[in-house]
Length: 346
Picture 1 (cartoon, rainbow, N blue to C red):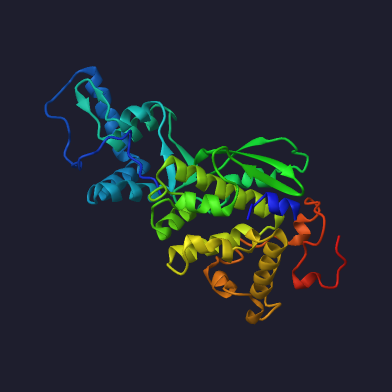
Picture 2: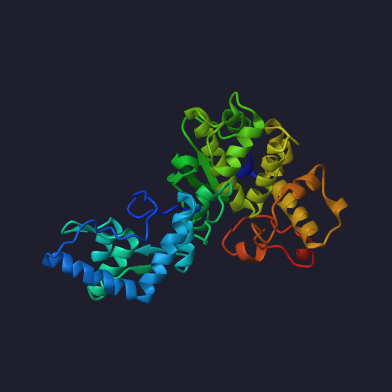
């Protein structure tokens, strides 16, 4: 089926100090000989002031504790101790962080940074608010075109560039009620871009790549172009027809990844391939069963398995028809959830 023509007619980061590996430090003085030069005298005074500073002592304790751990754990422990935030040293602290060598005397890395910053009168470090504990939102199939979906206009009568999966451009225009997606050299039917995405690779690995936005099995340029077409069709075109389409498609891909189905079965499982209204009914049935408005036996075919492979509604969700129908001025019925049974259709 021609997806558009037929339907339109119907980490954490590890941080190091300037990238330099540090050897475990010792409590022994780094001075190897008596030096009475004025520069050395100033340094000794700075060192004495630093040693008596509670904050510096605390930093020193952090350093000693970190020195007893592997390099990878050392930086994480220091970060977590200092409020779990990134630490940025400015001015003299930057010199200390790289191990300042002045007048033949080398200050310990972190201790020197604290001494220079503290005594110099506030050339201090700034604690930034980006914490390693703040994890990025996991990628979901369809995310690459979500910006276009949210800002799509029915007035888009001419082709515009839409950046899809992998930064590959497809063309999109509003045609008979929904975005119509094309790309030169790539067919606009599921029967074209699904096998084009799979190529000679294992279906399970391809499904995993589509779900995780990776390219372990989707390797060739042709595969990537077809995958970009697929994501734009589902994430922009089908989502516009009914929010929840991408949720269903992701659930099917998880089933393929788990060995339940093959990629060649996707067009039969994903009701939007048959027609827009079939897809809307599929989303509404799953939505109603998830919400307890219908019993599980209301699901058709393998929709029970599709629902089981789907993520929690709270995470991805089915947007309410009430939220979108004011923006999607489509002809014909689009409200198939049972909660609208007593309402007149637009």
